[in-house]
Length: 187
Image 1 (cartoon, rainbow, N blue to C red):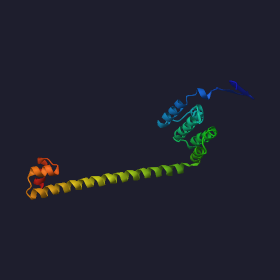
Image 2: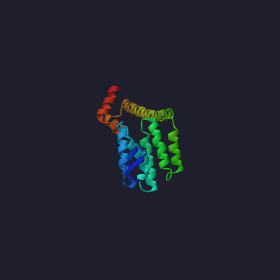
Image 3: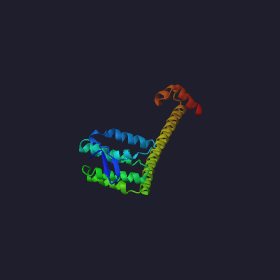
């Protein structure tokens, strides 16, 4: 291409860019940073996202970059812009991406905002349920530990009632003399 295109009075200046000269890692890193900070991507940055996988060498690196672009593009707040990036990414990656990955991209494109909200709520509910189960396990363990402690103290009280010396109760039960005397005082 030439640097200037003149069509029926419309004059466009073109900037030639070779993909091999683009820094794909930096493109991904910068887009991710901006979206994480709530900033919007400029049009040129959106274009870079769409073609970014092509800047990487080798099929595996291109596929991995495509996955990263998908995760980054999923953070775009404007649904129409996000959908456009996914559609263009699907076109750009068509030659090297697996059918499974292409299917995943199409699923994301077809998923409506409501579908995404439901999916997010489902994932949140699952996470809450897992946390609830963990809390129940921790409480059960704490309850069991308290019960074991009470049973151990009761055993020490019983030994003291039978006239076993404080030193032997302490030695047998793993208490200090002071702890045995405190247990005896509570009895």
